[in-house]
Length: 85
Image (cartoon, rainbow, N blue to C red; front, side):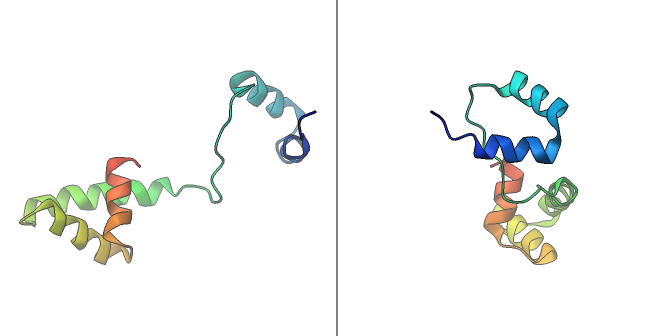
């Protein structure tokens, strides 16, 4: 028998009606739930800053570094946001 404790806990959090919708949409699939809510506002801002940085930077790599310094994050994090990874 499958362990349904996570499903039961999720049902308590979102309610039975929404859980029914989730089951209908994703039933039988394995889905990933991130440990934190994605910050789409930050990601959008990073994309805008990167596009601006590309106009002044000598390389894409320096644009990643410039945005990373502005945001206080690593260039790899900027790259993940830009590439959608």
